[in-house]
Image (cartoon, rainbow, N blue to C red; front, side, top):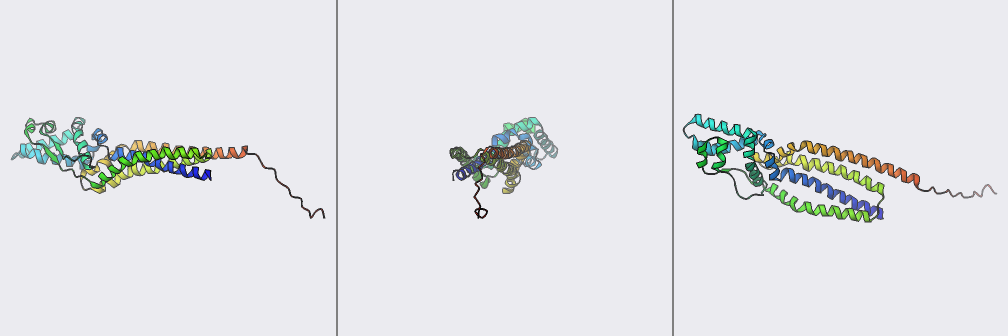
Length: 273
């Protein structure tokens, strides 16, 4: 009975731990504007996002600076596109990416704006300082807002449940081989959830929630974190294999160490008759 209870408690602990770790990765990749601001180069490497940003700024600003001058308009658009492709320009746009991502997931109520002073180095034209702030058309995606809020309150709860279930499982005195076998299964579960929540959801699911190019920000973040995710997957699967092998060895060793019960022979009375 205690062995069954311990297995149940450890199973719940592994599930909660898997949700905690994979949910943290999803939160970091898809719902952290600070992380996306630091990955401006990767995000602006997406053609759709870069085109959305450049077209919005050019439509609002270039038309006012180069009205009736197609040559100057083309030059300013070219400057804007070139600056957005340079590391220096991407650092200048990191604040815009931060605000756009925050607006997209519902963490920011105010619209995303680029002031005239910020347009000067982007357009390479001092006259841009006199322009009014440009508002970028970034929508608030309600499902992302719900997911962000859910993760924010769910992760601390499942983290606490992980510790509580693990402590109760140890208090039930499970077999060590069963603990190792459960840990191996927990590592496999964590690897699966990490692949789903840490990559598949931000890469393929979130972009489907909105027609805006800005909905591709989590997808770019997933791609930029792919190397780390692959290393984590290999580590988890390797640990699962090692723990499963160790549990089998421990189980065989315990079997060899257990005392052998002597056979009880029953006298066959038919031979004595």
